[in-house]
Length: 145
Image 1 (cartoon, rainbow, N blue to C red):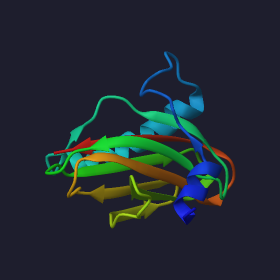
Image 2: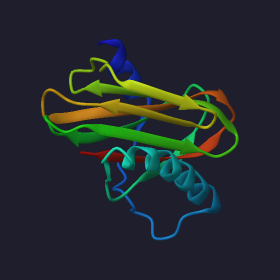
Image 3: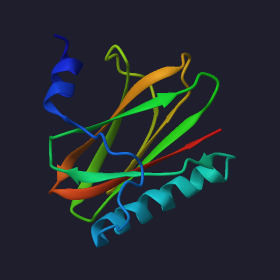
Image 4: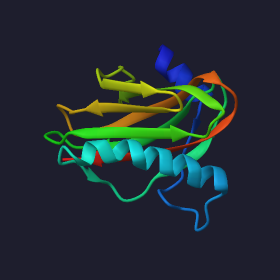
């Protein structure tokens, strides 16, 4: 079993549909605002915000994994924001075989982004991890063009 498979097995795969919850908690709303502010920068480059978002809890060293379908020929930016307890977030993208993809990374305190243009359409896995900080709430959104 490769490293990614072990990591995926150990991680909780978020099976939540975007916007599945009618009411957001204060922490979810705060994390959502941070992610939206970050994604706004990509809107200036023609990226459209995808409807929906994912929220959850991050603990240091314990990754959350989200499966998404991406399409060849599109460009994507994945933006994550977390509440103030988070200091350093990382976003890693894997193809369906568990191979890490090369992304254009961005990191700042409590937020991270990753740009990616897939060569093949299909399922991909986004891993969001808090590297430094304390347990926090995160929100992930993505933009495309």
